[in-house]
Length: 387
Ligand code: P1T
Image (tube, rainbow, N blue to C red; front, side):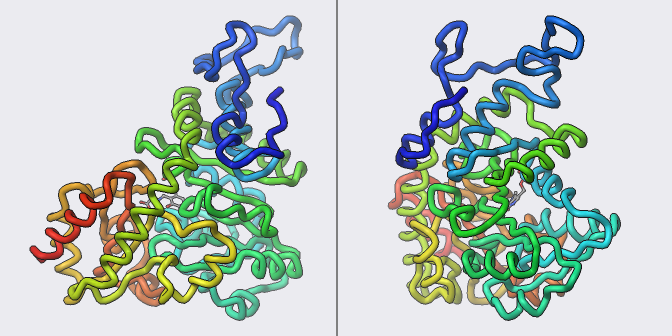
């Protein structure tokens, strides 16, 4: 049983969460328990685990570690961020209604509208930074409020405490996709959320080498229901993926400082550049969510998006001209990435829906990595000069 780390600082919890010396050898790092099943002393009497879809010691360590980061007792790991989101939505039943943000990862929007709607759930997409809009979208059958903050890709900020109060009054669960902020910068459970979801593919894993997801909660009943869904549906990560994610998250606090330092510099640079018409970064005082972000986030994270004068073509050209910022989907790894959401990560959102939410076709999104700041700024400068 892992020791209770609740009184320790975030860095100590990141390093030690979930990992106890392995009892047989004393190995300080949790081994990869590459096994599908476990020999039982007697029928239906398992030592600890019976089958690796249901449980695996490497996964146990990861689940405990992610929970510790969010300051919660219960974590569950999934094969991807989408699998984690899908598991949360399976807490609902046909006929239930969900209020969700209007600027979500394109894959989340796709799951909601193209898969789960067909199964009898209904969705209203609203700007969750507008509390009145959230209130107005509630229905008697609303069972879930689903929020990203900062959002992907527009970095909109929603007031988590206020939304938690709205959800509570409506009798709905409040789930926060904390992928962009990470628990190093924002802890939604302490602000009233019932569930926190992660694509651990991103900052939690941090090294662009593994896909995974997690759900964290303080509520033992929600944990039981989610563990049942996890086992019944089976979208679990393998032990190697758990190991890599666990290794990655031990340095989350160190990496996030550097991501934030670099993103602040990049946002300030872009805000001053004559070819840039708009910068979305909650750390800029001009950002409409700046004050709320300062209240509920420690720092503002490593994601920056922006628009260029002239619309789509210059953004497209910029993606081809950066050398250190590599053109790729995903985010949150040590490497800086650039992409064009409208044609890449958010292509599954209908153009009119994207535009109504403020996602311009020419928007460029940066995942600012942990390289040297001067090199990142020089890379953007030469690419901007060329477009
Ligand atoms: O890719 P996966 O691990 O399944 O996670 C999905 C997901 C969930 N939530 C947020 C906020 C995300 O950004 C993602 C994945 N996003 C990308 C791949 C991207 O480039 O935006």
